[in-house]
Length: 556
Image (cartoon, rainbow, N blue to C red; front, side, top):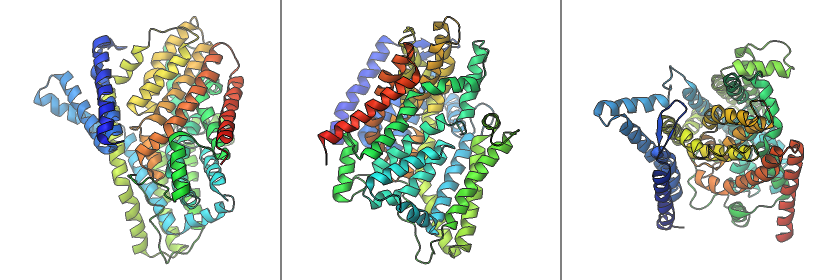
């Protein structure tokens, strides 16, 4: 479809949405009494519209951030002084935040820089090639290669960033060898990163989730701690659980449908793992290599082992872990207190230094060769980091204009206990899709939706409240999976050397399928009192029947 055809479809839809909101929902009141205007949805809506029309993500995000800046300036009075104050506010929002000084974003950038550089050096030293040769004995074809990639993504549960950064570049050469499309690799990486990190007892997510649960428990006067609430909600994490199951069944079946099937057919029949019009970023695994390097698996094992060891050890020490290191409760306490992203960045820096030493000692690379690898790794991060910064700029726009509260308020009058958990899932999905942030969505909706669910349970900690805890977390992850402005979606595409828009286009049908199964087999029956495990079993059965049906329709 040409740009003109896309514009003829997307621009009227954009204008229609704006007109309906301006006419029917001109403004809503936020929790603190502020008026939130309809145009708060323009920045994310504009970013998504332009991204679909132009497929130029950086341009689309940049325009949307500019629109958000201008709208925020309008709210402040359209003077020169307020313009500069808004520019400063946005600059701080994507770097050190406006609530004191928070270096979270800067630590994320450091983590990406040094992880990409470390992986680049490990690849150049032949360490990854050695690991690949071992995995190749297990990966004997496209189907087993995809399954192994899915298993790796499930096993590496520390965090969504570290999961994607390790699985994508490691498995990419094997995927290419067996003519598996880059779109399929990006889907597997993305769908086994945030879902498993959000479910894992030990991850960089649980501290954040538990912190939000603690705050809402205190707000509604609930005599329960965040850890207990997390485990109570775990059986109702239908989307995340079924996503992992869906990926494993899909890879084992060897069957695909929709846009993913077309991508897989292209890769299988032509050998083109990327589409001809793909705009690939961060392609380090296929490009970096030196003729003089000796394949030494220690050049990969030592830096990666050190990386995981420092992450786990750092989280334990920084979180002031006590008791046995084999105690789940001790780990949960440590994670809730640790500065997670700082630990990740510090571990990446140390692993990067170790990779240089290993490349020199074990693989006998010269310093110019190592320098070339580092340069290639760094250059591959420049555009991705710029896009991630713009994604944070969109989030800043949504925070400034209270976009999330506007979207959440549109459906707040529907309060049936039967439909409310499903509604919360949908609202969380829409909010995350529009804002491109799962964590931001959680921060918006947990304090908003959970007190309503608590009231629907007659001011008690009942089944509606517990299901809604899981629905917010899962809806945030589902919307994030479908959003072209999500930083984790972009990062998954980058580390898989896949065009981000191609990744979104091929992943969305699968994510939507799982979301529908989660709603019909999970949230609605659970609200009626059906045990959660029955919903998961039914959802798994539906997924198996889906791929059995595809096999019968297309046995080739």
